Length: 126
Image (cartoon, rainbow, N blue to C red; front, side, top):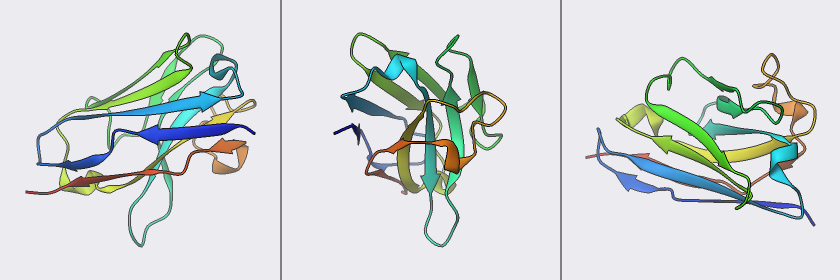
């Protein structure tokens, strides 16, 4: 049973930082492209960051570019999302997802992702 488990969410003040982790079981995560999505109340799920399986190239949504950094630790089978300078509009449930077929051109297409975590809440508020 493949599982992706996110952790690291919580309540943080505007301008603060958090690091989310996505740990995989039963799959070798470095064989899969991995992305972070988020969904705010009343809004659609959106892709915010991606790391490829082939060359570790990365992609970011414009809304988080320059503030968020995605990385992977293959030995730990974990993908991280470092989030700096957090804003209230970053408040959402954050999900990691893994895809065998996604690429840097199609990274934000939700339907391409085979495995999803359960989500972790990030709340940015003073």
